[in-house]
Length: 110
Image (tube, rainbow, N blue to C red):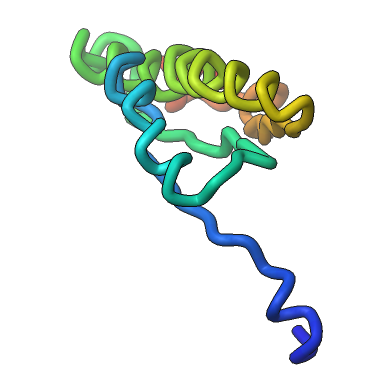
């Protein structure tokens, strides 16, 4: 970055997307600190590799929390803020595994 661009950088924060909707709703205090929410990027993923008969319920539930519930709860928290600002951008970064897949990635759902 050039020196003139550094002053235009906005603060950001990250959080683990498997948080519950109640934990994510608590982001309000962070938003109050930063002042606004211009962009929310959902870019998370995890997998437990192995054949399907070795995948535990806990491992599958963890992947579903991250890949399905995480972005859903983030949008639930972000939309009211973005609506109140009359602006905001939601960005989803999917995994190439959604189209490719391979044998040891049995529970991966992104």
